[in-house]
Image (cartoon, rainbow, N blue to C red):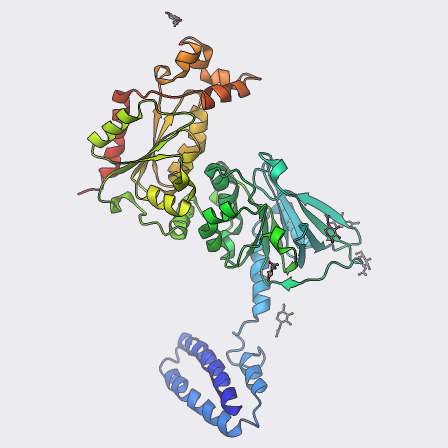
Length: 482
Ligand SMILES: *[C@@H]1O[C@H](CO)[C@@H](O)[C@H](O)[C@H]1NC(C)=O
Ligand SMILES: *[C@@H]1O[C@H](CO)[C@@H](O)[C@H](O)[C@H]1NC(C)=O
Ligand SMILES: *[C@@H]1O[C@H](CO)[C@@H](O)[C@H](O)[C@H]1NC(C)=O
Ligand SMILES: *[C@@H]1O[C@H](CO)[C@@H](O)[C@H](O)[C@H]1NC(C)=O
Ligand SMILES: *[C@@H]1O[C@H](CO)[C@@H](O)[C@H](O)[C@H]1NC(C)=O
Ligand SMILES: *[C@@H]1O[C@H](CO)[C@@H](O)[C@H](O)[C@H]1NC(C)=O
Ligand SMILES: *[C@@H]1O[C@H](CO)[C@@H](O)[C@H](O)[C@H]1NC(C)=O
C-alpha cells in the first residue's frame, strides 16, 4: 500500500517539480534547481516509505495541488475553472455590441445577420437530443422559446433543416436531468445538404470554421439531420475542429449537459470568410492551410511540383464541352499532363479527390459547383473558369474571388456567342444570346434565364483563343522552374 502511494505521490511531485524547474529558471536561479530536482524524488520515496503511515496520501496530493499551500500551487490551475474561463472568453468573441451586452446580462444572445442566426449561451445548457430541445436558465421569471434552424444561409433550403427549440426556462421550473455531462460547449448545426460540394463548403464547412476554429478543438458537435455520406466526406475537417466524437441526436436520444452552447453557424459570403469578422482573424489562406493539414495534402505551392499537370473537369449533363478531345490535344501539345475527371464516385470521395486536385497546377472547368474543388489547389496554381453566356456575374462572384483570396491565379475564358450552343437553339440575334445581362435580370425571367444559361447551354470552344489562355496558365505555373 505504502509503495503504491509512494509511486503515485512521487509521480505527482515530479510533475510539479518540472513546473518548479521552469519557474526557477524564469527567476534565474538556474543550475541549483537541477540538484533539487534530482534529489527530491529519492527524498520523497524515502520519506513516504518510512513515514508512509504518518503522512497520508491525500495530504501529499492536497499539499501539492492546492492553491493555498503549494509553492507551485499559485501557478497550479483549477481545471474546471480554467475550462469555464476559456469557454466564456471564446463564446463572447462570437457576438458584438448589443448581442454581447445581452450575453453578459442574460447568459443568452442571438447574432442575426442577413443569412444566418447563431445563438450563444454561456449558461449551463441541457439538451434533450430526442427532440432537440435546449434548456437554458432564464435570469427572470418568464419563459422564452426561440426556434432556430441551425444552418448558414438557411433561406436556401429551410424545409429540410430540422428545427431546434431553445427554451429559456423560468427560475421556478425544473429542467430535465442530465444523463451525460461535458465540460466543453456544444455546437449544434445541421448537415442537411444535397451532396453538392459547393453548398457543403459554402454553408457548412466554412461557416463551421468561422464559428469554431478559435476554440482550439474544445467543442463538441451535435450534428442534426445527420448524413453518413457527409460524415465520410468531411470527417477529417470535423475532427480537426473538435476533439470529441460527433453526436447524432437521432441515434443518441439522451439528455446531455454542457456549460454552454452555440446553435447555428455564422456565414460571411460565397465561399468566403472575412477575417475582420472572425475571432482569431483567420483568413482564406489560413483556411487553405487548415484544409492542407486536414486532408494531409502534399503540395502547398506549385513550385514544389516537377511537372505541369492539368485537371479538366468534364461535365456530362449540362454545360458540356462539345469539342473536349481537341481541347485535350492542345493541352497535351503544350506539355501538360492531363487528368480528365467526369462525374463519378471519385469526386465525392474528398479524401482521394482533394489529393488529386492538389497534385495539379492548373484546373479547367465550365462554371459549376465542381469548381469549388479549387480550394484544394496549391498556392500559385491557376484556375481557368470557362464562362458561358449569362454566367459572367456568378462565375466571378462564386469562384474568382475565392481563388484570389486563396493565392490561386484566376483566369477567365469568356466565350463568344458563336461558341455557345444557344445560338442554334434561339438564333444569333435573339436577346438571350446578344444581351444575357439584361435578359437575366428582367423581372420574371429569372427562371427562364436559369434554364437557358445553366441547363440548355453547351459550348464548342474556339481552340485558337483557348490555346492563348492555356499558354498563359502554363507560363504562370512554370515561372518558378529554374
Ligand atoms: C474550481 O473552479 C470551480 C468553478 O469556478 C469552482 O466551483 C471550484 O470550487 C474550484 N475548485 C477549487 C479547488 O478551487
Ligand atoms: C426576461 O429575460 C428575457 C431574456 O432573457 C427578456 O427577453 C425578457 O424581456 C425578460 N422578461 C422580464 C419580465 O424581465
Ligand atoms: C421534447 O421532449 C420533452 C420530454 O419528452 C417534452 O417535455 C418537450 O415538450 C419536447 N419538446 C418539444 C419541442 O416537443
Ligand atoms: C425568480 O426571478 C424573479 C425575478 O428576477 C425573482 O423575483 C424570484 O425571486 C426568483 N425566484 C426564485 C425561486 O429564485
Ligand atoms: C449519447 O452521447 C453520450 C455523450 O454525451 C454518450 O456517452 C452516450 O453513449 C450516447 N448514447 C448513445 C445511445 O449513443
Ligand atoms: C468584413 O467585415 C467588416 C466588418 O465586420 C466590413 O467592414 C468589411 O466591409 C467586410 N469586408 C468584406 C470584403 O466583406
Ligand atoms: C442578325 O442581325 C444582323 C444585323 O443586325 C443581320 O445582318 C443578320 O443577318 C442577323 N442574323 C440572323 C441569323 O438573323
